[in-house]
Length: 88
Image 1 (cartoon, rainbow, N blue to C red):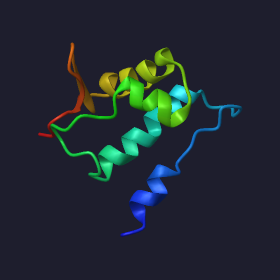
Image 2: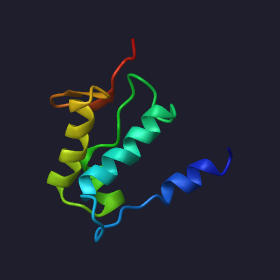
Image 3: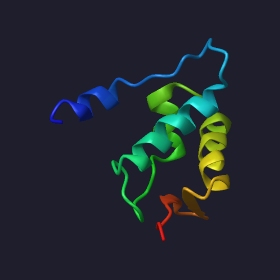
């Protein structure tokens, strides 16, 4: 799996596709969480990082994280960011 991080760096979103971009980003992050690439208790990329990585607006990045929070996959800590929820 040595080539995996390079692959993940190239994962992009389809800005012109049928699926809303925030849902595409949420799906990418969900996959990383489910595969254990982002461990429980660890932060997910910040809104700023998501904005830069996927070339989206802050609201789009925020909506992607909100989807994961609504699913119980992440916990948003005001002033700190979003963290992968502990599984139990």
